[in-house]
Amino acid sequence: METKPYLIFEQNGLLCGVEVGCVREIFFLPELTPIAQAPQDIVGAIDLRGEILPVMDLNLRFGYVWQEYSVTDSAIVIEWQEVRLGIIVDRVTEVKQIPAESITPQLSYGREQPFAPDRFLAGFARCDTDIIMLIELDRLIRYSPDKTEAQIPVSAVGSQLEAPVLQLEIEPKLLAENAKLLSNPHVFCANATPEEKAIFRERAQNLRLQGDRENSAAINMSLAVVALNGEYFGINLAVVREFTDISQVTPIPCTPDRIIGNMNLRGEILTLVDIRNVLNMSPDTKSLSQAIVVEIEDLVAGIVVDEILDIIYLNLSDIATIPAALYSANREYLRGTAFYEEKIIAVLNLQKLLTKEGVVVDEEV
Image 1 (cartoon, helix red, strand yellow):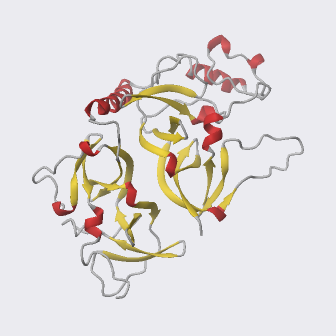
Image 2 (cartoon, helix red, strand yellow; image 1 turned 135 degrees about the vertical axis):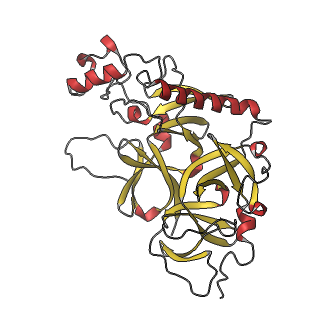
Image 3 (cartoon, helix red, strand yellow; image 1 turned 45 degrees about the vertical axis):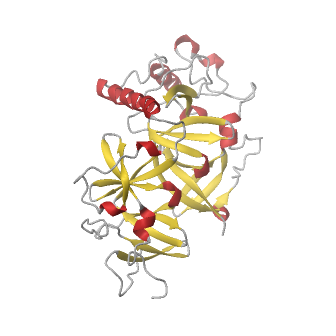
């Protein structure tokens, strides 16, 4: 059964997915610098470690009315062929392996008149009880509407936002609301509170300063940031196959306490492992909710975590040595520490931890 990993995110109340192989970075939305004469959906740019990165608003690209940004919004950096840009989304949720047979390429709406296809969608995926819209990156980035097509001038303001220029019927209330929100397009989040503006500005500054600290342009490690007993850890994304919710765990008799049990993951028997006691942390199996499926050499296991917080990208030079007495965890299985927002995370040496004798279950037992 052929599957492909997708990064799943929420946008305007919808679930969307983009191929993981095209994702380069994820971070909370920083302050954007407006760009003159850019396409209406390109709402600004950021200085990302010395690279000027244009940023797309998916709401505007999809033709929705523009909405104010929030400090909880995220930006996903995608790279498609020679194009690299950021897209603003409401919230990044998880990575899912989606089988090809669960994807419906197109939907029929039963319209008698010609109807424009879902030009930015590669298909619709069925995942448990959810329907996920899969983004077609080539069309999302390159498509330019024909002049005869109906368009909503969502980036227009003031006297430019007039009903006669519209080729679609739009409620006057929505037009007035859009004009009000975009009354000052050259100020990022003009209606944000001073505290929110400070957060956006600090994020932009941190992304810019990261470039000054790097000794090389290469970013050569991506980490999934997870929480265990209130402490933050980083897991190398190169060994992560997917994120998954935990359900219907079957206990395995005569195994160490760290082996939680087995779970059926789309027909594959997945062994769930709680690494906390190996890290000299108190185990907690009362509230099993999420796991990270990792694949190291011939070993596939589900690492039980309290919460999956984020995906970040680091240069190896950003990983520092472990300060004495900073972590209660077993330092033998930590590669070092790195900064995550205002916190410090410990980077796990998961390969060493999982290949330790007794951590995983021998299938012959």
